[in-house]
Length: 117
Image (spheres, rainbow, N blue to C red):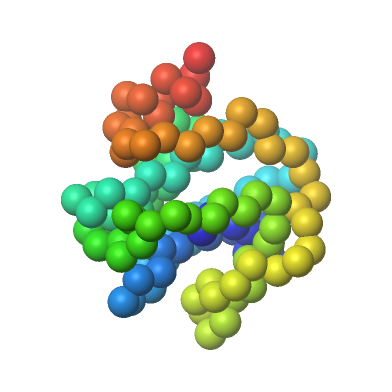
């Protein structure tokens, strides 16, 4: 999941036997921000902001990688004891443009090219 905390921080999670979570910076209101989130069993979660790597987790397995996954856009995430546990029914108040899903992990060159066309 990717979402925003109540204070506007980007939060990425992968739920499997253990919860992998990455908390990024607060996204400024009224400022366009290019966000890329990648996942692989080798690199874990990686968060890129405006073409630069912002943070990453340790490598981890994702048990549902061979399963059908549901993608939800525009809903905030509910934090429970510091971990994101669910998607709230409220909608995101902003704009999402050029949303893409890839069947492979993007590398830093791919991400930079997307952020700086």
